[in-house]
Image (tube, rainbow over all chains, first blue to last red; front, top):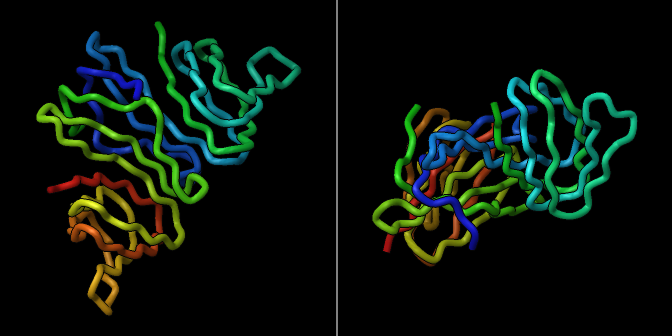
Length: 104
Length: 104
């Protein structure tokens, strides 16, 4: 199974929206922090500080990226970017498994 | 923050009960596999193959261990053991963050 090697994992989970969105922080070998998360069906809005790359491993969802009027419909594994200091909306249709990377 | 160092993390999550229980597999430096998981409020029953140690990091829940007639009420971080080849029931009251270890 694909995995990240030689990493650190923070023991405590990050919990948002009453646990409908949760993630685990992983620190890669080069010091980069990523999060591995789960989103349950529902509607959410997140703000970004850094630029984010969301790697959707599984799940069906729609995403409204900043400056866009049309929702991006995701039905298979894909990635999308979110600019720093912005916010984006998610409509989660099925349990979604993601990896989020943060870029300077 | 307390963390596991020099480990591997499987990218894909384990998803149970429509995502109300999810976990991430982590392989420790000595090859031992553990899982870091989240359980949302609800009632669940799990079977064990190996002996398990459940380390509850956060959450309020009750546990019915095999051979017991009384539910164990958990309101603060604690650990409990489950024998191999058995099953146990959980009543999750608040979002529960756990680490599960598997012993031979």
